[in-house]
Length: 193
Image (cartoon, rainbow, N blue to C red; front, side):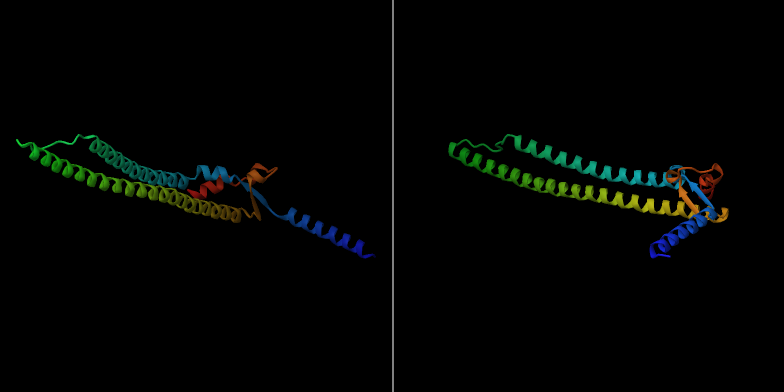
């Protein structure tokens, strides 16, 4: 027997052995998407995510309102005409008093504007940090919930397979054909209640 014939014979025999092994295995399927969509824990996780999302949005909206308030206040302060509070009978005193009152009022307005400008800048930076925290935080929480939910689903699938004596359970979306009696979807859902 040539080496090529021997290799072909071995390959053929191994294929028959594999086919025999597969035919003796008990196989079932489940609808993972269907289980996931009907799993109560998923609904609770989505509600928790919505609550956290609303909290972040509320905080960001409050910061936006504070920024708008400060910007409006600055705009009104800049548009406000300079008033002279003291007048004197003499022209020289009037000029000096007016000058002094204007200088005081202008410098006070400049200080207020600078302080508000810094506060607006700080609020915008806080808002940006909060937006990033919200995106990342919600993404991480969603990922954690998904891991927990899918872990519970896979545990229930394993338990149903073991109880039914199944050697292999595949997702319904990957099955070409399956007998309705081998669908463990409802059994898995019962285990998840």
